[in-house]
Length: 137
Image (cartoon, rainbow, N blue to C red):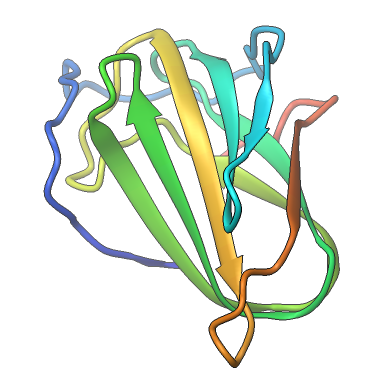
């Protein structure tokens, strides 16, 4: 079970209507930026009501892993705290919701993932878009 917490940020809006599961709609990733302890997957395309799937690979075990999603204006719309994760690969899914449960509009987003070990040292992370659609919700 994931723990989701609300953080300061601006909600990008959404119509608050019902959501239907559908296929992955992700644009070509224009760049993956490694900013030391934060790895960013930018130019991720979300179609409103869909999910976005990313593959994360940790070089070593991490005590704390956090994923943050930002809209095209740089507003943080979602934070997910994963806690400890083993080294290796995992698939993470952003369901297209803000921290407040609001469906986010279609658009371009950036996904940042940071990981630290038990001594608060940065753990190397590699992010890539999933090649398949995430499982239906």
